[in-house]
Length: 310
Image (cartoon, rainbow, N blue to C red; front, side, top):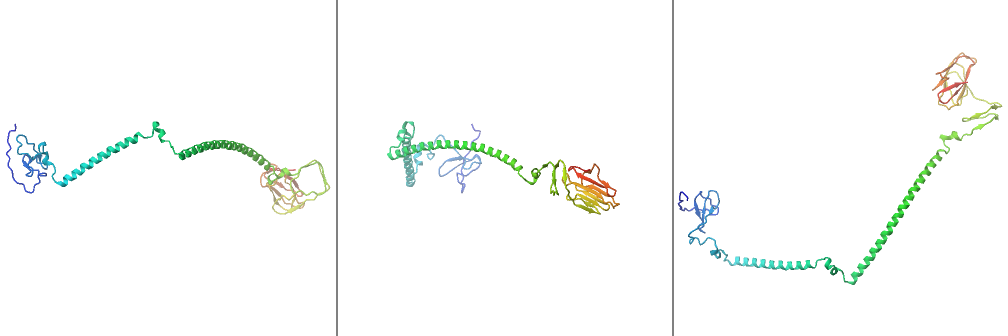
């Protein structure tokens, strides 16, 4: 039991809405339009509604089963709207039930193994078209088989071509070998004639190398003699070279193997002829001196590294 009793008195609060009024904690206030009592806790807008027990004869305005009718609308417009909504709901429910029946009927006729026959066409035109398509499919299968066979034939031809290509490659290699043996500047020497035996003739003019095996007999021949009194580089067309004064005779070691000269001091000179190769040696030495008048040497290039004296 509470140790104190709260005494109630009322005052008018101007411009205060009962639904938002907070009041002082512990004080009770009420809405004059409804008579409902509310307890303020100091924070809750509208307070806390109070449940009244005991004698409720003065509280007939509180909603209960006994006075539910007083809470129903009496305005004809609102009643008409409510009736319209109720009718719409009933129609919607009926429509939904009807649609459900249609769905059930549709599902019962849905394609399955049990009713496949009902889905087959019965129109002769459609059946004829289907038969035509079936025949076309058979033809397509036959065409595919022919294409497969053709592909196999093409593959066989390709394999044959591969073998032919290998043969062509071998033939090309043989042709390359033959081409390397065709007359050209690089192999002209192999096409030059080689004579054996004795040569009996008058003057012979040679424009390239000649190999002579056996005994050479000539009835006479003439060669060019060049005279020099200063340094001179011997040419491939020289043979007898005579120096009439001190000079250097330069041998060109870039000339072909077998290049030969007769180099001589003039009979009336007191000079010295210094014979020097552009590369290689002369009998193993770097140079050769001809110091006496009328002295001569016969010299020949071995084509490698040395000028030989004969």
